[in-house]
Length: 165
Image (tube, rainbow, N blue to C red; front, side, top):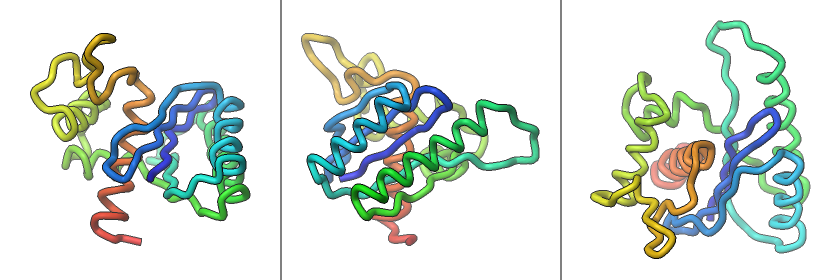
């Protein structure tokens, strides 16, 4: 299993994937709610899984308060997961997601979503979401959850499939 986080300064998204990369759980929630979810999963339910967190990288541009707040939350998530599971989360950088999933640094969010749809739900309407009556692979996904899925898939491809530890 893989637990992956797309962190934000106030809200973050996560996915929990089974060994076949099928979503078992996902949400976009407040960072405090995600801390509660981490406690629930790793301390009380004692799940065993790999963990990946998207990490902020500097490309020479100045950044503001929200980026630094996101960095604080990344550290808090990392420490909570480490404390409750003895797993050291792996940091995944956005450039790795772009190259792994789209094979170009010019990829945007829409390209990443399309790469995920092509991989897991090809030839399906509505980006593989389906309908309430006929739920697709990505039913319930929204913007930041797609990015958490990208973090998980990049982790899987780089570290589980290729063994780049």
